[in-house]
Picture (cartoon, rainbow over the protein chains, first blue to last red):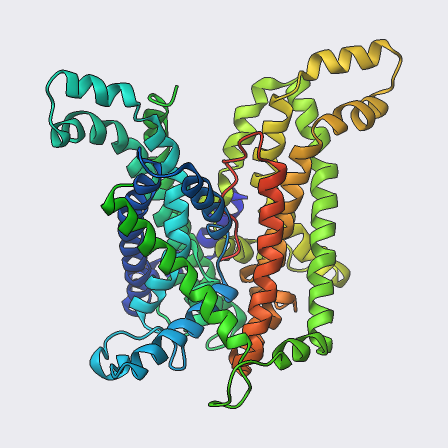
Length: 253
Length: 262
């Protein structure tokens, strides 16, 4: 499969690949990268906080099992239904929009730069599957932070922050970075959610779709070149992911 | 519970629940703004819509077809690999990572080109082209799930016992191995069902009218019935995923968490 893709984009001519670095296309790549990086950063940051909140001592067990079960479902949840759920929430007639309006706070007036159909809106919707994915991926790593380590650290006189600085964060780092890459790829590849929210969103998957279906412009070769570019970005990410995964596995015995 | 933990969990719960509530709220509204809650007319609109039944039938049959083809293809293969060629396992595991590097939007571009010029009964029909694409899409999930299943049983002992008692290879596979990996195969099937019922990217680019395409069409044209329809599609996906979690609870099918629906 992979080989087929490479040949195809390359084999026609290099002019398509060259075009990728030209004006509208390179913008689409930036748009995709921005959305992916922002949702991956926010998703991994909040994801680890929520996962830790559920796992740490003192939180009832059932919360944890509800959260992981729900995350297993929600991480698989995306596309058209997700987009609609957000339109119903924050769209012009959305439930939350209406709450605010009835409370005398018109979102579209007070906060005009936020629009569900803009880049920020798409990012907010992506978080709905990014967050659960992070929780699922990072929970085993957090479990791997053995309680004995913590006790050992405090017996040796370490303070809370010292435990995190010298034990917790170094142990978690490979898993965290691995999860970050997973989230990045997840957002980078997403098509249906963004398509349903805004078909004019300038990100690569939508551009490929438009070129391929000929909705706007019909140029399958350019679509193939764009697809090839996506493949390259994700392949690089994958190459970064594999060694991280190996390192992370060291502590999970 | 620590106060900060409580706050974070509460925020997460709000973020996850509000959009679902909003969808429910939308689905119960009358098609005129300002009329009071609640009406079931949107649900009856959906249930009386011919296109709904038509597209959901296509998607469901496609899912069944994908599951059948995948199981026929991968169960014997995985059995053989575990029995005779364990060295090949990492190679297949690596191939299972490919759909992560090649997202659906890229895959469909390649597939459309590869199969261009094939006869219309294949290229022009969902049962041909789309099913092929979905078998590829489902492969990693099939692999992770079946692999976990095969690893949890003793393939060699079971096979030797069965063969020594005079069973043929087919009988061994169907009557001995299959019942032992049943829950893994079921988990893989539910996952595939969820993927196919929600897959939009490939169907849209290849111009086939499956259920998610219909959903998108209604989203664009009719807001309130779309709420009802979205909720129904949640139920399908969530039902499949919850069955998966129930079936796969004992063994960790954790590798299989990312589907291609978005």
